Image 1 (cartoon, rainbow, N blue to C red):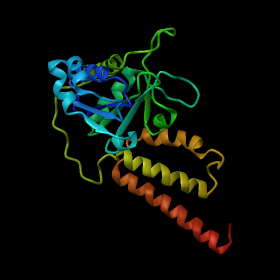
Image 2: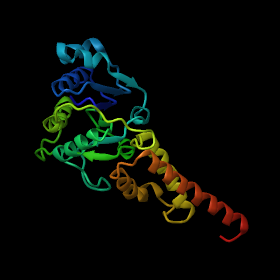
Image 3: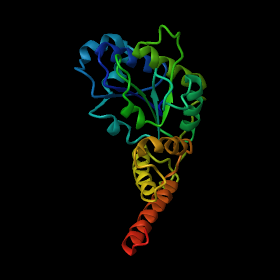
Image 4: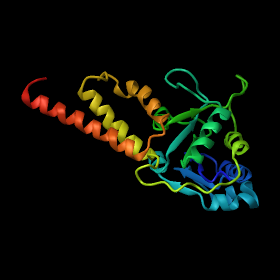
Length: 249
């Protein structure tokens, strides 16, 4: 069972595709589905495509209003994209991502895999708040995949690697993995601290933070480490305010 993995559909267009995704989820033992701001979602149109087996996944799917809210409790977030190059660095193939995800779930992480709407995919802003990128290779002149096909391919790679079901380890509050919401808070505080000491260029700080975000995302940050880095940010900003008041800067 891929019960530590959640499929997140961001702004899906067609209820029928949502039903097909639910069927793909149950095929691969993934019981968790979140719908972010679906367009005119109709359960009655989705159910026939989900089939009897996928009905339970579809009926218990959570519907939320925005992506940040949907991702807040997760420890690791993977976004899917068909677009390559530019600032989209370190893109993983499905089998590479699956190895990471299964390893992370065995360490106690809850993982979200985000899929964009059928016609446009995820926006740059939506991609930016996710941790890692996955792209499914296709023929160059036929790169568009059906939403359920994309979900099935990535979950299948995870399913192949899933070991015999184990009990999740008991993890203390200090040693648990930092959630996605906590990481976003850390990124915001770290960016401001680095701006205060002129480490980041002020003309486009979001862009120059990207390598640092990717680095932190690879670390599987724990809650106590999150607290440590937040303390560093607070100390930097406090020292900067003291220096400003004394006229040393």
